[in-house]
Image (cartoon, rainbow, N blue to C red; front, side):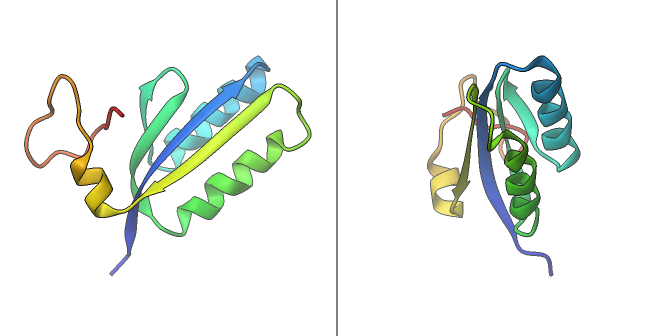
Length: 95
């Protein structure tokens, strides 16, 4: 059984090509866009390392900030969405 975890990724990237690449990468890793620079989802734990690897492309850029926030199941369940999502769906989370 693959262990999955909830994760939120937010970023502030001024470089257009890097921002576009990062957005595509997060989508390809199974995260869903919540807002322009916020992604979330329930993904296999091993994919968090892939997100960290993608974030490494920003390491030496001054105007590039990325935050990766893993959430426990309880914290995710206690989160609230507006408008409320249907019971049993994991499609998005608004914090």
